[in-house]
Length: 281
Image (cartoon, one colour):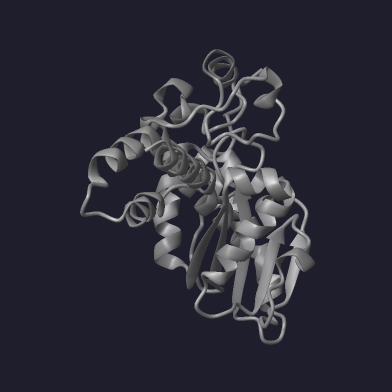
């Protein structure tokens, strides 16, 4: 029997076909009266044990060409990084919003995801004509005084070009942040697992205890029943406060200058430590 040639499409051809399918899906929305700017909203980090939730909104015109865009979960990291730059060049607008681990614990992860998405939408200078959100309820994303229509799509990042582009922006933005945090907490391996529940992460939690970046309410963090330890960055700032708040400095002003860029949880710990130190003096 003669051999038949291998006719399986190449990875590049498959990506092009996927991109064309996502573009065709969105083309139906551009046909609606008054829709020239279509926005997609998606998140990254919702299921992680540590770090913030990141949400992104990407506003695209119909003529924008992004043939390789796809759901961020099916793309290699190097391709996501390249597409991140392509999206920034092509998009009419991009917004990124964050919700801290403390906010996740305080209002739950779904509400924190919606909060991050609203912050991303608030970052836009002009509202789009229509927003497509990946499995987020429209009423959770609406903002007072903004009448932009919002529709929810299940598995939107695998169906819509705009949502897929947002998934890439959110994923790359959060991954870059977690790599920076890895330099502060190298024992936890954030650069590799990005705060998710990998075995190495769980083992680090068990041996070292959680940090203020971890989500207190998530199983796998409090499950180990260990105290939360202050970060090395915070300890360094406390040391600087001790040496710099001399007779000619207002300690409260020094504290504010040090604390402004810290996460909310660390600001509170920092303030409590400063109060204790002031009372001991």
